[in-house]
Length: 322
Length: 280
Image 1 (cartoon, helix red, strand yellow):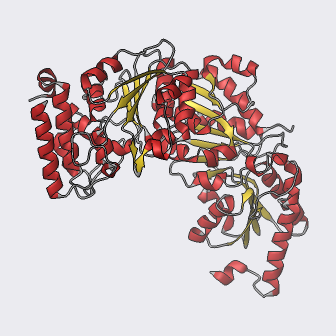
Image 2 (cartoon, rainbow over the protein chains, first blue to last red):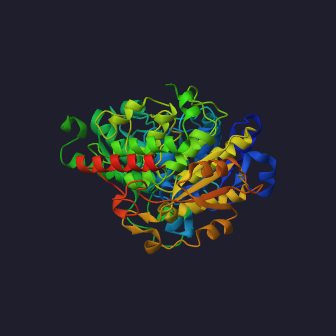
């Protein structure tokens, strides 16, 4: 059943507050928590107003005194506006603040580039000690929120806005461990976030019908990065394709390329939002299609790369480069 | 002589004089230091650490302690000198300031005993202080939180975000001190970004406000200890100070902001402090 990851977070954290008196839910007037939710949370919920820098500073101060704050904001405002407070007040001090960032990627839809976050993963994953997670569906969100209670250090969780479908049956989601959704020796498809992971799964099915077997990884944690699973999957493959709702620089594709360049040189195609600001109205599904972050695009990319390699006689691209 | 004995026989003015002397010595080191803004807040730091704050140098992490944040982190030399005089670490370590391998960085870092959180990028301290005050309230503690802000720092919008939050959360165990020396790096604060009437600004944000001479440590201590001045409101003390206080050749000048004292000026500074002490 389709469900929004941000709602899954809200319900999970509300359930946890009562069991863990050290938890706090600090809001920046996002509207995610209704008056009824706030009442249910009692004094563990505080709306500190529209002031994201202050939100991060207050959370850091509380965390330095033994509390574990979940802070609610939009990804765009966490990753750019409040970045310095996150870097200095939270990450530098390795404080257990949970930055719950909604409207990640293109999820803000028609609200436009001011409210879209296409740089957040690049920015967050370079901060020392920051755990960076992108749940692909509501069930994973619940699991990650539960696991975050005892996670040391800071955590950034990219959430969506509107309901998105569940991903197909997968191993239990664990922070730091990639989920292998399908195994195949020809190519590796790596996604993070709801639409990219679903697109990779669908692309793998189409490719299988064409005789190309793909491993599909849901790389939901960008830091710490599960290099072991990625390298093992890439070893037999001729091509790795990444897909994300993020500008092409610095996010999932960047992390995959960095890892493989050092440990298992394999050709990597990074698919993401082109290097520009969104220029037309559309909901998330429309924009995902507009920028071709789709299963069809993944299939095309794989076919083109393999056909080119075959035409140039490089039937095993990797062997040629080893 | 132990710290306890020092506290028994010295006046706050005596302690402040020793701290000024350390600050001057540190700013004669290889990297110099933020001399002017350090000297302007020495009397506030002295009042806090030698009269007001309930802290234990043997147990700096006591959860019930009062907490202090130097939001104007560039005045680190003054904080280090104060912490050392108070007994958090040996005074001899101050001579390492600005020298390779020392933990005494140009802005406060947690590696230094007594420093609560690193500061130095301006506009962070008051929000952190709100977090301390909120956490103490949730834990049922009566501990107080003090945050020292520079007056130039008030140009950072995040200060006012925190001022709103502190008032709306009724954090009356939170006390801000503004080191109102009137100067920032390149000139007078009021020429660069006018902020008067400053007391009215804070009042309009819901704070209880007092304005005093920032170079009278006894008076500062009495006022800072007497909070909350108005129940349910955070307190802000606007301390009228002189940048470079104690050094006639630098006092009241923006050029005192960051100084590497030459051997000659170091000697001038020391003799100026001695004269001031003799007159006190």
